[in-house]
Amino acid sequence: MAEVIQVTDLVQGYGKNIVISDINLSVSSGEILGLIGPSGSGKTTLINSIMGMLKPKKGSVTVLGTTMPNRKILARIGFMAQADALYETLTARENLTFFGQMQGMDTKDLPEQIDYATNVVSLNEDLDKHVGDYSGGMKRRLSLAIALVANPDILILDEPTVGIDPELRQQIWQELHRLSQKGKTILLTTHVMDDAEESDSLLMIRNGIAIAQGRPEQLIKEFGVNNIEEVFVKAGRDQDAHTSND
Amino acid sequence: MRTLAMIKRVLQEMLRDKRTLAMMFIAPLLILTLVYFLFQSNNNQTADLAVRHVDSTLVKAVNNDNVKIHHVSSDDSAKQLIRDHDYAAVMTQKGDKLTLTLQNSNQTKSSIIKKSLQAGQVKLKNQATIATLKTQKEAIGKLQQQLTTLTKQAGMQTDAQADMSNQKNNAAKNYSVSTHYIYGDKDTTFFDAFLPIMMGFVVFFFVFLISGIALLRERTTGTLKRLLATPVKRGEIITGYLSGYGIFALVQTLLIVLYSMYVFDIQILGSIWNVLLINVLMAAVALTMGLFISTFAASEFQMMQFIPIVAIPQVFFSGIIPVDQMAGWLQAIGHLMPLYYGANAMSDVVTKGFNITQIWPNILILLLFAAVFLVLNLNAVRRYREV
Ligand SMILES: Nc1ncnc2c1ncn2[C@@H]1O[C@H](COP(=O)(O)OP(=O)(O)O)[C@@H](O)[C@H]1O
Ligand SMILES: [Mg+2]
Image (cartoon, rainbow over all chains, first blue to last red; front, side, top):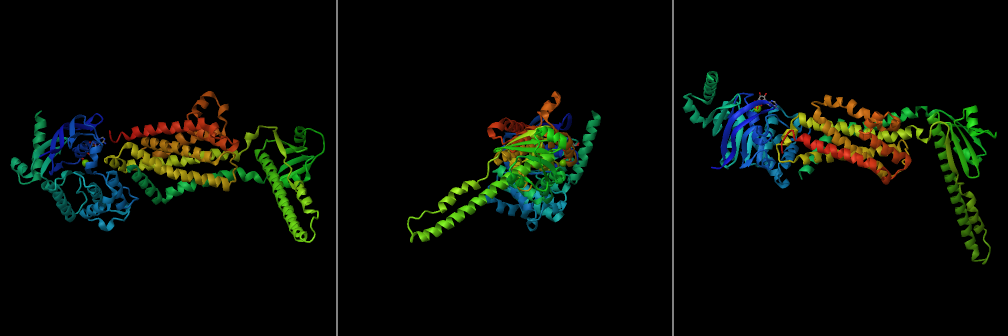
């Protein structure tokens, strides 16, 4: 199995402030990796490093064998940022068209792909509404549709399920599993334990440090607990015990 | 391809935003109109014009509601006459030569006199043309009449020919005017000199503000960051912005120039293409500068705070106050202002009829400004993505 995303000994921060340190992770083709951690733990920082928006302070990030930052690789990544960044005066269709073109899509593929992407997030009815009139959840869904529209090999999604109701969440997960079976690699962050259980493997991160890593059922067994949430709590306590021993 | 998509998006956003659209297209015209009326308000003054040995037809043509004609015959010098009687101007004729001496302490009066004289000459020329057409028509009528009788009485001398040769008498006298000023010189006219500067400034100001705020909004809403998560090149973003807003700036410029020409009746002595060229360059500098300055603003309000720093001082150095009479260090500051070069070139083209070979140094400097800010912009975007 080819490693699609490889992060080695990554240290990252803003200015002198170190936010994450010694992160190692690899995601192979067709795998869904969930990044779990409380808010402020450094998930977004890690995602932005993988996207090449930030240059590693130490260590390295490679995507599809190419060292990041690299502009051209971005054409193969469908990205959903944590904050919805949409053009509110434009309609959803215009937003999708624009980002599709930016992603380098062929104009003739656009209608079909827009149709597909909006179907996944159930937005087809509201495709020609101005985004300014959208609710928060609808904007979230449009952001996800934008990540999907260019049919990318890799999906990097920062908190994709926030503000999305359970029924639609299931529909989205169904599509993510289908895509991963087709060989697409997916990396997503969440602080919802339900999302964690859907992932193939997990990386738990707390205060910028990886505290547990592995397949969900394997982690539950390893920590001798009943569910992922308890794994996280226990791993957190271990981390605190470890640091106070120092 | 990506640049095209960028341009299209900028246009779409702009067309949806009716208020900004109005600000870009209507506000400049309002400002110019206000300035126009400010300077025109004392236009219902009457200027006293003394005439000496001037053809009565010309005097009649020059006379209008704003001019009061005084016939003088004394041999005093024009200067003396003006001193003694406070005439706005004295006009003397010798043959075809007119000498116009303007008091010029009140520029509005000077411009009334000059405009009236110009209008008078044009009026005479038009009258002459009409008279010529009339005689021609009569002559042709006669010819036709004679042509019909010609078949009966061949070889008759036609007096239509004689009429044709009379036409010369109808042609307007071509007066040559030499103008003298007692105070100041011809550059001390007001609105005419002020308008080209205002035109340049208005284009600069609105393009600066609107493009700056647009990029700022893109930054604060996070779409710029999102955009840089696609394989778009930094250059493509900047080019897209420049072209998109460039199109609006071009339309705005056209609107302002046409408005000035048809509503204010501004006389452009040089080529209108040069006027457009200068305005487009001003817009380019304003665009690149606005985009760059917006990187230092965190909100629209902060962007507005740059206006007194960046935009207003430019007005002082645009030629409203002659820059070459300022203190050395002030002149140096003036030479750092794009509007100084733009307004200079505009005034040269509009009021002096300069052509491109005479204004190219100013053009070149404007290009340089745009190029420098372009490079600065490319580097400013680097903050968001290293490649
Ligand atoms: N642009 C930034 N500049 C400075 N500090 C930042 C920036 N973004 C995030 N941080 C800091 O980095 C830490 C991790 O934030 P983030 O990666 O957003 O966490 P998460 O996504 O897990 O909520 C936080 O303490 C946050 O304050
Ligand atoms: Mg985050």
